[in-house]
Length: 443
Image (tube, rainbow, N blue to C red; front, side):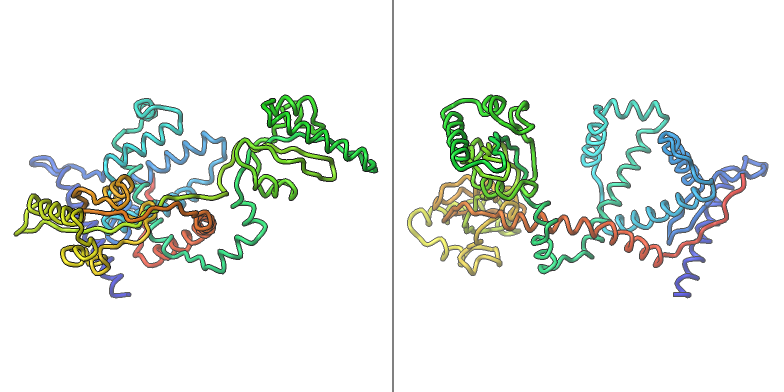
């Protein structure tokens, strides 16, 4: 490690000497050596890269402007300088990782990001760029800053998320906890009519209120407006709002409500529900999340043939058309797939791919799979893997609500661990890097 650090120092010094030499040559007049003026200085050496004084100064100006705009008192200059320098060093390390990993942000992705930023500021892209120009910011500099931020975010997500593990037991414990049940419960938009019952009311009185509640339910089911009935009859404080309770987490509702609302379809009204307060009629207006999450699945099989130096694309399509005609004529698809398909993962199984889930296959494959009638054989189509013919043998609607719920809970637990793990990872890459901080320049 010492040997490596000495080599890094030697490389950095050579890099520094070369930079000074280039600056000196640029400043030399044709025949006379004038006084040399240093245009920039190195503030920190970060492995094989450097942080320049100009970068630090520009970031200091930007951060101070943000602090002043927020009305917060700025810390002493030396403390702020150290904080910003550490951030620049961290960015250098992550950008190098991104470059080495082949991460590239295309102009299209960058433009989409700028459009999102402008939209969040309730501006068009042109308005956002004009505002930056008025603030003295160069569009090219802003684009490069956003590109760097996107690169760093991808590096962090790739490196940090790989370090986070959520066990099945941890997931089960969260889902069974009170918090887990709350955050994963669906949202419901409901209204209610309450017919109150005084404490100590006799059975005859209670039965009369139940009959009244049933009569109101019949009126609503026969077309009368639920909100109008609530305004005229409900004893709840929401009566003047038509009984609207708004959006609520299902887990926030009283237990007697939860059981009833779970059985309701959108627009349906519950039978009278008894509580200590009286009888309630609950109407479900909307639901978000929860319930069955039905996803269409396809059981498909295919034959893949790839063009090559001997067999061009036209010949490949012709061969697949011939195989398609043979299947239509009665030959067994599975046997032909075993003989001709060039997909090693499915050929031995007669081309079978099993039950699909959305996003499992490439776009061209999923589009063909979702539109072709069951047991028909598709015309040849291409994907990044070659040319295919495909047959869907079965379709079904499958409830994935359990899987979706677990995925949602897992994402929440991962996000909770992300920030903590991110800081640990950032410190690790800082400790492993060669960093040499130069003395601050004296103005």
